[in-house]
Structures are given as structure tokens and as C-alpha cells.
Length: 334
Image (cartoon, rainbow, N blue to C red; front, side):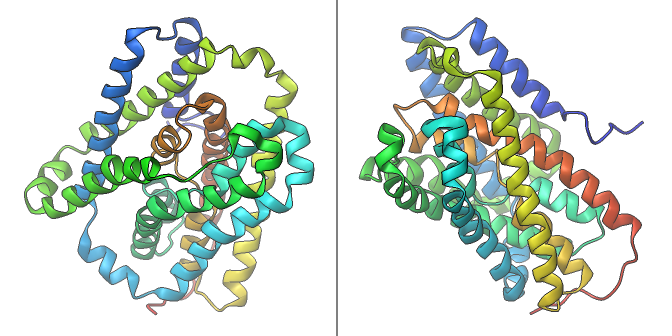
């Protein structure tokens, strides 16, 4: 029996349990340093495994479909940030400067990989293009997300105060050594590590999810110790849910209209809608750990956690609707 779309997925249930654990039993003292070392190693392993399982051939072939990718990248790295800025007069008063910066962080993040491909496949869309677009979005996001957050942070810096993201050599060093180099190493060693990763998909999935849970535990532990949640009323959480719903309600229909207006096939439209409207939790939480070091990371990733669950439920419903419809046209290739 399949899980209903409105129920949280297993990862979200584990995230909720992790947040509860961090709230009741936060890490203290010397345990913080040990947790930081363990988390950094886990993040490096996560990106090494991503590099090991990402097919270079699929990336190269998918890159030929440049019109589709251009639209997805424009939605991911242009439309979302512009929406975050344009809606600031209404969003920031609802949730405050820190959570609003977390919303901007959502807007600056790349697309998901696994769930974008899974939903595109379920909806009978262009899976190859979705694989390339989402994967390339994640790779580019390693550089574009810090740059976007630097620009967005300066733009809202007057009211966000310490929440504004400042680029520094230490920030780039963290991105390069913790995220980029492990990914490149995975690509270089893919000939040897790729078959093992392909044969142990369940282990890799557990490893990826465990890394996310480890980071979330550390972030929310720090937030609990600092007493941040005493200032987070239920009304703010409801407002945050409404904001995430608003972003999806704007982007998904807009991408559908643009795909049809630009003459994309139904299969390409499906890939565009799912890849262009979704944001990555797997890469977003590790990036937040680096970009917002020394800040209220627990609160800053809270909008992303809410958005993640909402996008899964919405996309599951949309994918089933696409799957029930007629499969018209052939995916374009350039």
C-alpha cells in the first residue's frame, strides 16, 4: 500500500525526531567540537558519493538540451531570488529578519537531484534531461549559491543585521575543501567507486540521510543552547508555511505556462516544472553549515525544512496528475 501524498515522508519524520532530540538533549561543551569534526567528514563523504554515482556521459548528453536547461537555471537562480526580494515587504514583517534570510537562502539554492528525477519519471517526463539539469544545477550551485547569498545578504543587510552573509576566503575554502574537492574526487575515481556505489544504493541513501540528520542535530542543538526557539511562536511557523506555499504557487504554474509558450514538448515541460521549482535539502543543509557559520543555523535552515516537505507533497500530487494525462510529443534534444 502506497503512502498517501499528504503524509510526511520518512526523511521528514526523521528530521522532526532529530529536532525533538536536539531540543531535549542538545550537545554541550567538548561534544560540540567532536560533532563538528564528524559532521565535516560526513559532508565530504556525501559529496564524494554524489560524484561517484553521477554519470559523466549522462551529463554530457543532457547538456545538449540547452534551451531546457537555460529555463530551469533561470527559474532556479534568477526567478526565485527575484521573488524573494520582491516579496520582502510582506515576508519579513511576518517572520522576522533571521527567518526571512532563511527564505532567501531557499531562493538561492540549486534544484534537487534524486526527487526531481523521481517525480519526472513518475510523471512520464524527459528523465535524461531532468537528470542532467538537476545535477548540473547542483554543481553550479556550489559556486552560485554563495555568490547569490552574498549579494542578497548585502541587499537586505540593513535590516538583517548579523544575518547577512559575507563572502570571505574562509567561506570559499569551506566550499572548495568540504564540497567541491570531494565531488571532483568522486568523479575522478568513478571508474572504481561507481560500481560499488551503484551496487549499494540503499547504503548510500542511508549515508546521505544520516549526514543531513547529523547536521540538523548540530544546528538545532546550538539553537536550543542559545535559547532561540523561545522567540518562535506558532503563528510564525504558520506564516513560514504560507510563504513556502506561496513560492511554489507562483513558480510551478509560471514554469508550466512558459514551457508551453516556448514550444517545449509535454515531456520537457514535466522536467522543467519539477527541476525548476524544487530546492535541495541534501546540499542546502551542508552549505548552510558553512555559509552561516557562527550564526543561528538552526533557524536559518528551518524554512528549507518546511519547503522540502511541502514540495514533496505538492510534486507528488502534480506528478500523478501528469501521469494520468496523455503522453504527447517527443522530447526535444536541443
